[in-house]
Structure formats: structure tokens, C-alpha cells
Image (cartoon, chains in turn cyan, orange):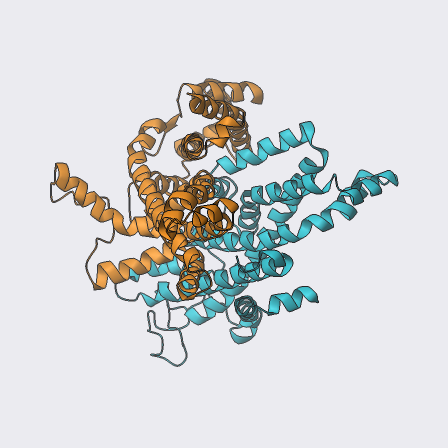
Length: 276
Length: 325
């Protein structure tokens, strides 16, 4: 409750929460407002926004409703972003916790793997995964999660390193509690706040990665996606630039919302750093 | 000299990482459905199992996985990246042809992002919580949220299509037949928009880090001492604060090198630049795994090289790193 009051004190954080909620509401409302297939033919192609009251945001080069694609795209972007973040945070916490808690050889080995992932440019690695495993929605989500975990692992490890020698951990150890209990019940809850704040960065990056992939037409072609629409608009950029412009604004506002929420959480969970 | 030794030791420590990467990539390819022989047989229009076995023996694909991994690593040590069936050339040649454009783009974007991020970060920190700070921080947030490929496309609409100030893409006007300085200027002219596009998100990150780092250093005791000596505010910032505040920025260069290479894939494809990133995209589309693997390998080498330079820079900026050991 105290954290929420601290969070709500900042107008920027409230704006962020509002943006994220708005995008989520768009995604939820998509099947109700646009029950038809958003990738189906809707009308004459390349109508400007406002020309036809049936298509408030116009139509794309294939005659599909842009508004319908924006609404359904919100669903896909948030779902992929959320699932990929969940995967990245789960891998990151597992690796970081084991490395930080046990130290020694386990730490060295796990950190070598983390370093290897950090040395490879993550978008290139994602391209490689797509080239090898194909580009359906599930593969892409897992792929984005699999290239985004190293910073989470480093952060978790640092927290574990400083928490595992604290008195409350030692007290629990003296009571004869097992390692699993120590890791999950004693150290992890205390290590979680900074990791959760960082999860917002992972989510922003995941949404950007997915949109970049679908912009290059390397994502699942059967799923409506903002990046995909921007890519389609490239061919008519000189005259009908609105096809690319509109979904870009949607991505920008989503990422902005997620970042502002992250910043607000950070200020609420670490009040000493607020204002930095 | 000690700087170099220290950096070389760090470089040596990255060799196991590189080996791990290569082994990982090799195993990843084992998971890919079908091998070279399957692709060849498909191209030939099918064939019997005896021919397939013959071909597998010829390419050494019948050996155990570990033996092939050893063979693969040994070829990489000799910088033999294999042959690209799509381009009809060795992969190393194809990559070398594409490397200059990417290196140029990355250097330009990094310099732009670093310089502008530093200037804006210092400005924001000097006017903390007043309107210049609010404006700069808000701009930073918006830049951070802007997808680079979208910004590139919108920049093309505004600056190339409507205002007609800058070219929409390409790496220079071949038809104009420029030589010497004119050619260099022409390339620079073509790189203005790509540089801004790729640098935007890094500008946002650098300005945020610079602002935070300036605020942190400004609160330290030695700054108060400098002020107490009667130094002007400009001199305090320029001579005492800046150098210390730059340390996290330099660290960031090393951390962001890989992200920047990844970003160049999208930016190069927006602006039709003949670089490594677009090559990566083309090889995904054409299922040219040999080339893609080569690019990933070269990128890893590049990231390691950048971090080597960052280590050298770091030790120059902060003498404590050397005396500490």
C-alpha cells in the first residue's frame, strides 16, 4: 500500500500505467470491436484516415482495415512481450540465483555461459534461431526470451552475493533449513524488487525485438502485428506514409508506457533514489 | 605498458567464452532439420540412400559429432568460414566486402550518440529539476521508446521525400562517378540519416546515464573542495567532474557494442546500405546458414575487440585501475 502511494505520487508513473492499461484494453476489446479476421479484405486499398467513416485509420495496401490490425496487434505485442519477459526473467533468476548462492565452480561456469550470450548481438542470435527453428509465434516468443535473460542473471547474482551472507540468511541456515528453502524463501524475496524493476526494461526490449523482426517480415505472417504493418507500408511510403506512421505511434506509446511504469516502480521501491 | 598487459589479460579471458559460443552455435546447427546433403539431394531432384551415404562420407558428415566439432573449430582458427552457395564465394570474402559499411555506420552512430548524450546529460544535470532538465529527460524517454526502423522511415518521408534535403538510401551515388574527397563527402551525405536512426536509442541511454553519473559525482567531497578553492562552476565541471562522470559512459560502449550490431540489421535494411546487417537479413531469407553463422562469429569477434579498446580507454581515464593491482 505504501509502495502504491509512493508510485501514485509521480504523474509520469501514472501516465505510464494509463498507457499500458489502454493498450491492454485495446487488446482485450479487439475480438469484440473487430470480430472479423483483421487480416481479411475489408475494402478498397489505401484509403486515407478519415476518408471513409468505416475505416477511421484507413486501409493498408491489401485493403485491410488498419484500425482492426492496430487493435489485434496490441494483443499480440503485449502477449509476446509479456511471455518473453516471463521466460527471460525465469531463466535469469534461475541462473543468477544458483551462481550467486553457490559461488565457486558453479558461479564460474554459469557466468561463462552468460558472458557468451552477452558477447553475441542478441538480434543476430534471434535471427539465427528464426533461421533454424522457423518463425511461428511460439518459437519467436521463446527465442526472444532466450536472448534477453543475461542482464537479469547478472542482476540476480549480484543481489544474491550480497544477501547470502546477511544475518537473516545465516540464522535460517543455523536452523538447519535446506538450500532450496534458503534460496526460495529467504534470499529470493529480498532480491526480487530490483529484478522486477528491470523486468520492465526486458519487456520494452522484447516488444521492440518482436516489432523489428516482423518489420523485416521474418515473424509469423498469419498474426496481425504492428511491425508487420510498418513493413508493408514501406512500399507505399512516398505517398501513403500513414500506413507505416500509425502502427509506429502505437509501438512508441506502448514502450513509453512500459518504461514509465518501470521508472515509477523503481522510485517507489527505492525511495532513496527518487529524483535521480 | 601495464595498461596493455591488463587489457591483454582480459582479452585472453574471452577465449573460453568464444569457444563456448562456437560450440553452442555448432550444436544449434545440429538441431536444424536437414543437413547439407539433404539440401543438395533436394537440388538434384532426389536420389537413393546409397548416394546420400556416399555424399555424407565425402563431406565428413558421417563422423561422430565431437570429431566434426573439432574439425569446425580448426577451420575457424584458420579463418575458413566455409563457402556460401548463394553468393558463390567463400563466406569470409562476402563478409569482408560488407564489413566497411557497417563499421563506418557503427563508428558514426556511436560518436554521435556519445557526444550528444554527454552534452545533453551535462546540460540536464547542471539544471536539475528545472525546465531544461525536464525537457531533455522527456526527449530521452521518447527517443528510447521510438523503434529505430520507424524513425528511419519517417525521416525518409520528411527529409528525402518532402524536403528533398537528404538521400533516402544507398551508400553513395555510383552514377556520379565521384573520386577522392568528393566520394567521401558523398558517402558521408548518405550516412547522415542512418547514423541518426541507429544512434537515437543510444543517445537516449547515454544522456540518462550521463545525467545520473554527473549528479552522483557532483555530490562528492572533492567537488566541494574544488568549489571552496574558488574555482568557477565551468572549471569545476570541465576539469573535475567530467572525467569521473565519463567512466560509466565508457563502460556502456562495451556493453552496447553487440546491441548496436543487432540494430544495424534493421537500419541497413531500411536505408539499403551494403553492410553486414543487411547481409545477415538476406542470408536468413535465403536460408544461407553458412553465411549467417560466419556473421555471428565475426560479430562476436567485433564485440570482443570493442571491449578490448574499452579496457584500454578505461585504464587511461582512471589511473586507479592500474595502481590498484
